[in-house]
Image (cartoon, rainbow, N blue to C red; front, top):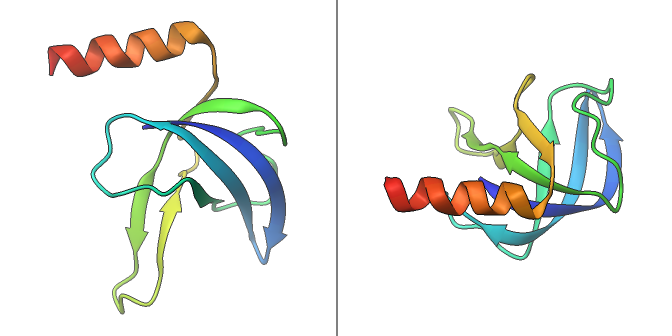
Length: 98
């Protein structure tokens, strides 16, 4: 889970690749750097992430069986909500209770 700002969007084959500025990482099981690529396995614009927009994103690390592909994947129906200060408070409160 992290707060990120969408810097760019590009269609690559049958997927959408977003360049994301990671503003605040919250609960994460893998390290994040300040800029990451976020992959969505479709080209339909779902979820609708707009360039310049800030979002709370719940993604997972995807590594293929050959270990030749290692990327951050936002699955179909994944969690992507527009960022608000309220979202940040909710995430911080949930972290305290874990």
